[in-house]
Image 1 (cartoon, chains in turn orange, purple):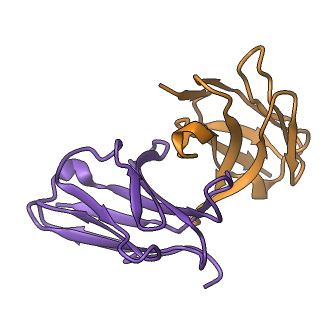
Image 2 (cartoon, rainbow over the protein chains, first blue to last red):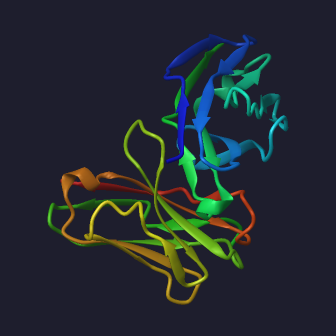
Length: 113
Length: 114
C-alpha cells in the first residue's frame, strides 16, 4: 500500500536559518503530494501541493518539488521565522483510491529567536 | 459555515461508554473523510463518503466504529464500548467535488477514554 516517510523531529533552528524536511513516498499509482502544517492549538492547514512529476509547490516562502525519480517531496525554506514553529506533515493522495490522504508521522519544528 | 466544524471539541468517556462525534463539512462539499490522529503521530484514514454513500471504510479499526452521513451533509462517527486505545484526535475533512484533491480539515475532536 501507499506510505510516506518523513524525518523525525524535533528540529530546532535559529531565526533566519535554512530549513529542510525530508519526505519520501511509496505509491502504486500517480499520487498528488502535499505538505500540511499544524500550528500550536490549530487544525491542519494545507501549506502547498504538487500534482505531477517536476511540479513545484510554493507558499509562504516554503517550496517543495515533486521528484518522481527519487520518490521525494522535500520541504525547504530559506529563512525561517519564529512563527514557522509548528508540526509539518507530508502526505499523498491517489485519485484511484478516492483521494484519501496517507500521512507521514510529522516533524515538529521549533524556531528560536 | 466558512469552514469544517466538529463537535464536541473535547470528549472524556469512561471505558465501555458509547460516543458520537459530529462533523459539519463546508456547505456543498461532496466528499467527507474521517481520520484518527494518535498523540505524536500523523493522521490515519478511517473512512470516506461521497454524498451519502460510504465508499471506503477500510480504515475503521474494528466493528465498534461506525460512521454515517444520511443526507449527504453532516456526518457522525460513533464508537461503541470505547477502549483506552481509542483515545486520539478525530479529524474530519471535506473536498468540494470527487475529483478535487485539496481537503479542508476541521479542528478535530479530542477523545480521552479513561
